[in-house]
Structures are given as C-alpha cells and as structure tokens.
Length: 350
Ligand code: ASP
Image (cartoon, rainbow, N blue to C red; front, side):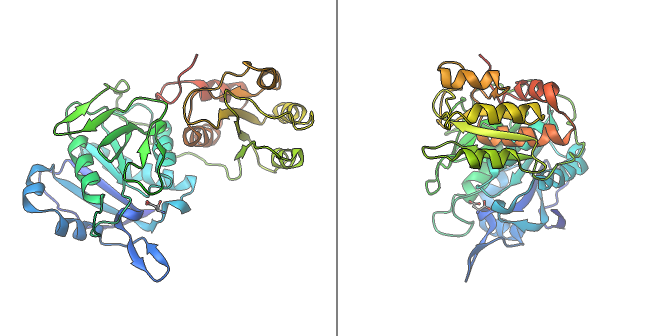
C-alpha cells in the first residue's frame, strides 16, 4: 500500500488524516461481487451534507495503492500503514484508517504493538454496507470517528470505531458477519460510546510521546493457528509443528484452556516443539473469560510442556503480537515475557 492520490479537502486547519486502505466502506458492486474502488474522497464529499461537514474537523484523505479487500491483508501491509503514519504524524491531531472489516481487528492489534505508546489517537473504521448504498453505515461510522479523533477526551491509543462504539483495537473482535454492530470487545469494556453526546468510558492507556515507527521484519510462515476439536488427528498437530519456518503456534483449546490428549501424543509433541524453540500459546475458544492452565489435569500438563497460557487475549491480538515480536527479533524466554507484558492493554494477567 503506497499512496496513490490525495483527493481530500485540503484546508489550512486540517486536523485529521484519513488513510483509505480499501474494504467494503468504499467498494463498488461488480459482476464478481464487491471490489475495492478508488476515488473515495470525492464520493465522500458528495455524500456529506454541508451542515454535517461544518460540524466536522478538517481532514485530508490519502488513498493507498493498491486498495485491498482486507481478506488479502498480509503483515507487510502493517509496515506500509505505519510508514504513512510516520510521514504525516507531526501534521495532524488524529488519524483514521478506513479498513475492511474482515481483518480490522488484526490490523488494530498490530498497529497497537508496533506503534507503542501514542500521543494522538489512531482510529480504524469501515462499514458493513458501502458508502452510497441504501442503509449504509459508512457515513455514520466515519463521522463518529472524525468527531472522536479530535475530541479532547479521546484515549490516545489504537481504537476501532464502529456502530457508535469505541473499542480498544487489540481487544476488539468482529462478532457479526451481517449485523451493523459488527465489532465488540467481549473481554474488555468499551473505551467510548456515541449517544447524543460522545462519552469516553475510560481514560485509556497512559499517553506517550511520538510512536515507534520502526518497520518490522515480518517473517513469513512464522505463526500458525490450530483449533482443537473432537476428532483432531495427532498427525495434523505434528505436521503443523514440523512446518519449516514455524516459530510460534497459537493453540485454541476448550474452556479454561483444556486440550484433548490426542492418544497421549499432544503433550510430547508440544514439549518437543518447545525444546526446538517454538513458542506455543494457549488461548480459549470461548468468547469470554480466560485461560487458567492447570485448572484441569489436561491443561496443567501444558505448562510443563512449555506452553504459555494466553489469559484473556483475543486470537487477533495474539497472532499480531507474535508476528510483531518475532519480527523484532525476540525469541525464547524474552519472547514469552514480551508476549505476556500487558503494556498495550491487550491482556489481563491473573
Ligand atoms: N471483505 C471486506 C474486507 O474486509 C469486508 C468488509 O470490509 O466489510 O475488506
């Protein structure tokens, strides 16, 4: 994603930068279904009635190239976004990233880990129905994000604004494929809400100085995900753990972090992989609650095998955090310690 055009309303008092990356919000129907479409700034200007426009902060809109369906997102796209933020950071008070909903929670998580402590908000938003279509939520989501981005009480962190909610980015999940309330943070309180007034329910994370814009050397094939299920073959687990280039596995287990025994082959396979330096993180398949590795004998054996309990972290946060930490060169105990560090509000220990 490199910048293509700068079609926004250039004003002397421009305060918010909107980075348009693609996604349903700006898509157009084609014979193959919805596809990303350029020219969002002009279309947005057509749809914003003058009264609404007057009540909004000034913004510039930068379109990235190529625009993508966020299902095609790869970790290197996070570097491209951070590079655009780095170029513009000093010139704006707040930043909005227009993003497809499918992987928005991954990008919000990754940006939170890459940028670290922030002195300005970075808010991601998108839509379930493209701008200009009947009942589109594009304008509402974007207008709310624009107002929140310059509000004095907005938490200075990476958030997702969707359907009148402000969520911590690395706690957010896409929870509905069809409904307009597509995002929630099932394991953490909302950061804010847009009723008649904007209300910020939390002060958020302590504000920082300028963020860290250092690019991450993302490693391909380094992170894998495996969800246990009745009938999971031990051979499949062993083959995932044997994959060349693998450095971390996220294992989605049942309930409080309980895996199946896999005919006695699970623990030895995990133990052997940990000895080879592969980090294994245990997350629950439940939407709420956290992993207590050791509540049951089946889970307790995981700790002995070197598996790290992921507490209440989301799947999206865990995968993004592992990508970022591995790409920053961490390994072994340093990787585990950094993974469990709650600095970005992504994990509740205990
Ligand atoms: N596939 C689309 C995307 O993630 C879905 C959306 O934006 O709602 O880019």
